Image 1: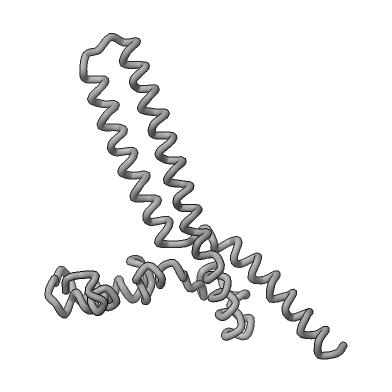
Image 2 (image 1 turned 180 degrees about the vertical axis):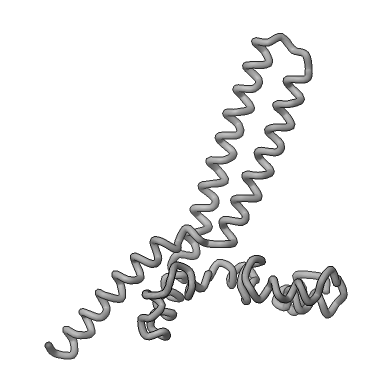
Length: 172
């Protein structure tokens, strides 16, 4: 086997690993999933408040049922829009995520493919979303919050969000 065929073989194997790991982890875009979860929670809260208000209004039963059906249709549309926005967000980070996944695979010498799911996963959406050390549930941010507690001083804000503080997108 000559060098060019070995490179082609290694490239196709790498592409297979990237497609398998990328497909499994593409849905785990942290920033997109958190935004979707927040939108779903707010939608459900508002729709439940509207439904409770209509049921308590003392309207005729047929009008109440019709209005509740409109609320459920509105909820379904809002949830579909939120899911579409999450998919668009996740798709916008798919190419950079593939590059990061390939880099982790190459740097680890292929061992990252053998690790349990997400053990060597680097979520590019968190980095692009302003969380260079991982999302709010990552180990380093949780440890940082334990140390800082409820401190809201300038130093605590710079430690929490250095990128936005340095670029003046956040008051520090």
